[in-house]
Amino acid sequence: MAHELPALPYDYSALEPYIDEQTMHLHHDKHHATYVTNLNNALKDQSEYASLSAEDLVRRLNEVPESIRTAVRNSGGGHVNHTMFWQIMKPQGGGEPTGALASAIQSAFGSFDAFKTALNDAGAKRFGSGWAWLVLDKSGKLSVTSTANQDNP
Image 1 (tube, rainbow, N blue to C red):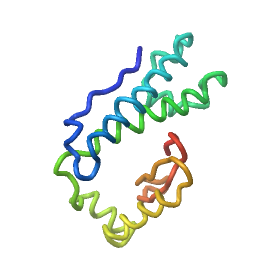
Image 2: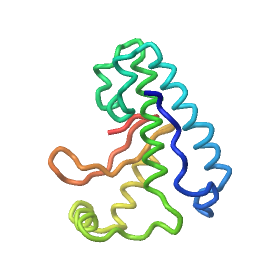
Image 3: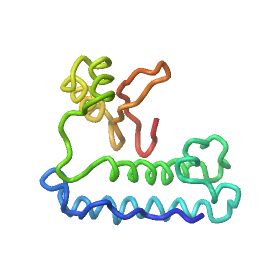
Image 4: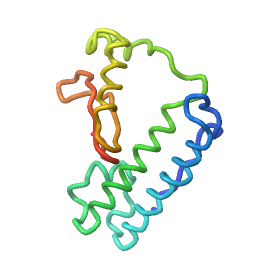
């Protein structure tokens, strides 16, 4: 299965003024496209792994042959992370969550503002490139973490 660059679910300019059109083109058409190309290149002689989704490759990274593990980690991770990134944003989005997520954030952080501060701090403290994440930890509680480069929790 060849991995493919997903189409954006909105126009490149749809997230302005928060993310400008030029930045969206750069991240989607260059960065994300390169992750997909490099992932496919790493897997071209690996029939056992070529049929796995990018999510499964990243999830099973320790099973991937060491000769391609770094490429799968970087490019597979970049593909997974960016695909999710495009899906969780939307034009006219934002605001505070409601329902179960709002309750879980309130319980874990005390307030939505405290959560935003924790997430921003995690991103700001990451040296170089990386991601800040809201995760459900092993105890079943929401927490904030950060990963380097294209790693994910």
